[in-house]
Image (cartoon, rainbow, N blue to C red):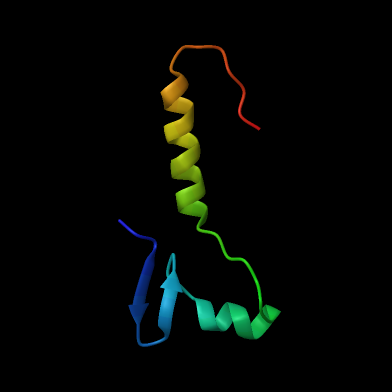
Length: 56
């Protein structure tokens, strides 16, 4: 499921209106989904299985 959606506030990421972020920090800015980062980390960690590894 995509972390992006639209509602009455416009485009949102993880439930936060991107227009609100742009208004508070100016543009251009980079906005990342914490949930997507955690999910990608977990998938990468699981891909290594029991093989010794460190993810930085």
